[in-house]
Length: 156
Image (tube, rainbow, N blue to C red):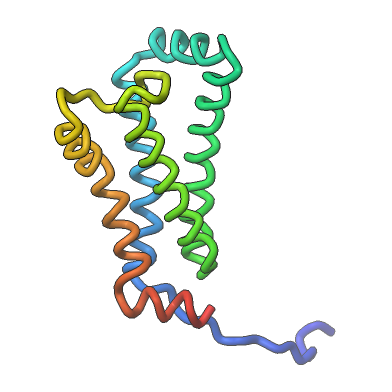
């Protein structure tokens, strides 16, 4: 009879609302990003972009890397809710990589132009980059700064 077996159950700390909001925001930001790309390019433009990305190895790596980054960010969202410390650090790392590549591509050091920000000067590009990354910065703030969030990850 399995009803009378004694098992050790440890109480788990409830997930703070700020961490839940951050996880939902990560998923929603990525979903909205994908929808905006579909809206911008359309089906024909999207097919052209994929075909263009498959022409050289470097373009293919950038394209696959961007897809991989989206999947890692969504994995981080689910892992953050479970209290995995590495997930918030990995999400921070993905944001550093994405922002760094977007900044470099916008200055002319990367390809394709879909992964760049148009601007007349470095200041305009930087301002647009900060505005584009503001939701991600808010998510990082929710994961690292408030005391309940830090306590949640420390006690898990």
